[in-house]
Length: 176
Image 1: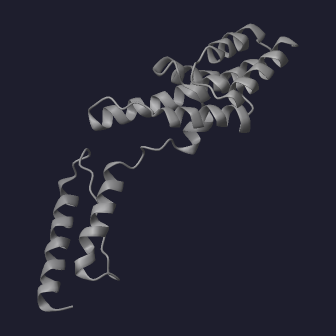
Image 2: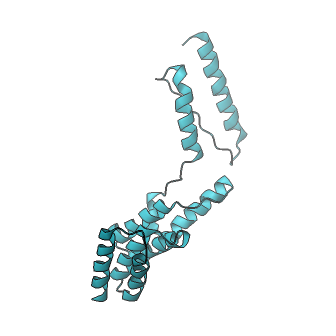
Image 3: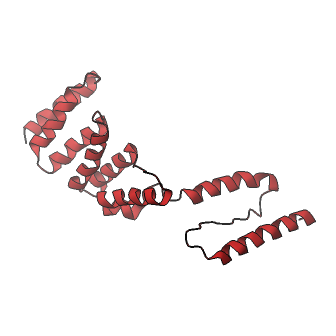
């Protein structure tokens, strides 16, 4: 490392020490040194690291996911408080959580909460409405399942195959 590189590193380390000495609980920072990278690459790695540091928990942590719907909503409320503006879960996140509850955790009642959230945000949410039917069927709630199937069957954007699958599903639910 040339003399100017040593001076630059020394300056950065001084800033790091000074920030540590401030003992300010709400100040979040991290210094990362890219010893294996040439100087020209450090802005690239630094930017990626900065974004990861600023937004570390936008994804739903596994433990929160397993705890269920209320924990997931609390996670987004915590993010909103941390960043100072309303952060809502994305529909794909809620859908994935619903599928996880329905399929892997075998908790259809909890899955319904996620699918209902998506339906309340986007009444035409096809996949969430389709899977809420499966959750109601698993709970033996025939009328609720039929209600959602009928809403789906009223759509005018269904392919012939989708309409046929929904009609067969409705027949099976009616046999419950």
